[in-house]
Length: 54
Image (cartoon, rainbow, N blue to C red):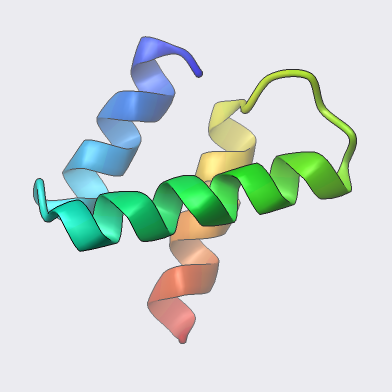
């Protein structure tokens, strides 16, 4: 994760630990499904979008 991905998660979660965990987990799931070696901001944005829809 880069500083931008971490910042995106913190901004989307407003610092709420439960949401931070939810977004990080979802980001890793998206990254794993693409067999990525690092979690990019693309995966984070997909995770945030997906979690906010549910």
